Length: 108
Image 1 (tube, rainbow, N blue to C red):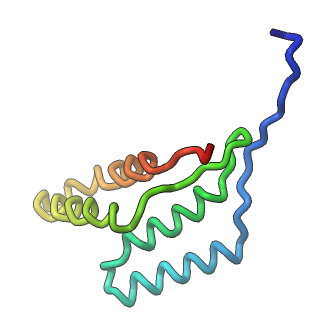
Image 2 (cartoon, rainbow, N blue to C red):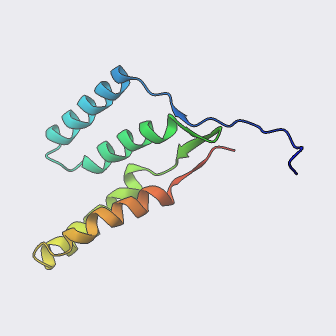
C-alpha cells in the first residue's frame, strides 16, 4: 500500500467578494422589506452560496435546503422561543446548524 501513488485532493473556496456583498445586500433588503418574514429565505440563499462554492478533498459540496423547508421549522422554533420566554434560544443555533448539515452533501 505504500507503493500506491498519492493523489492530492485540494480543499478550497471559490466564491468572490462581490458575490458575497451582493447576496448579503439582497438578503438584508428582502428581510427588511418583508419585516423579517422572509429571513429564512435570506439564510438559505447565503448559506447555499457559501456551500455551493466549497470544495473539500476535491469534492464539491451542494446545499439542497429550501426557504420553504426552513420556514416551517422557523415558525416552530420561534413559537418555542416565545413559550419558553427565550430559554429555547439556547437551542435555536444548534437546531439551525443541524438543519443546514442535513441539507448539505457532496455533488457526486
